[in-house]
Length: 319
Ligand SMILES: [Fe+2]
Image (cartoon, rainbow, N blue to C red; front, side, top):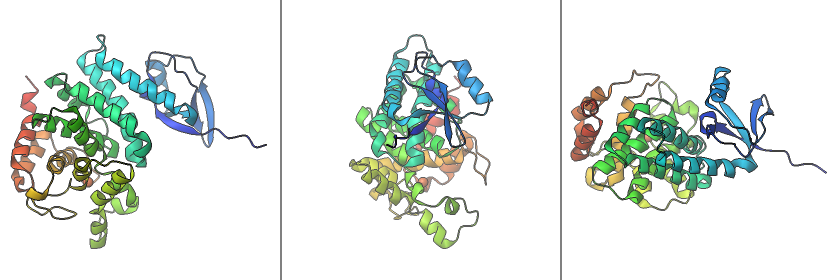
């Protein structure tokens, strides 16, 4: 009889610093093999994490059958971070960011929102909980936003900026903040349907550009296929490149036809793109990015842009 071969899933090392025993074994990957690193019931410490990082290990693995336990640990831990009297505000931000990244990374790199909806929901909600604690919460998260320059970091930043802007515009209801947060996190998920080669071309042809400009439509398709039926969330992703003056894509909608989430996302997406390093461009400072956006303000809802500039302008934070 053939025995079922164990399946493994990668986990982010930082997410293991529970300060308590994990209830499942951890593995290292070597070539095609998985080697036992820790049997269960051993505490994983900050030093263990550092040692692994120093040895060039980016991921540990758990057996797929233990994934639910791992998810529960993380979600439970997020709750305790927010409530913990022992952590200061900045420490809470760092931990929240690391834990949220676990699900952001999984969803953005695989497009599998369907199996992770509950976990993504809980991690976005925990971030909202944190954001609503004080106006300094956003600043602390902002300081972390330079951590990752990849698609995952971009999705997380756009999600966080969008929730903060929506909140500033008067969205105080946690359900709508969650909606804009999810829309921001997944806005570019449709790029998964476009080949990597095409996306990284330095001189794309007219046809290539046309295909790339369909990614918001693909994002809508993935969200719909994942069971998202909230029109605001879907329209936010679909319209994150639609400009107020009608020069955006994929449809060239004008401002009055663009949803509120879409109007928020074009601003937060553009800002994060300008302030991140790209292979072909040096990143701009927050102030330079904002003044560039103000020079092309016909692309955006002017009132939203003004609020965003207030939210992001550094002078508000140095006090
Ligand atoms: Fe995009």
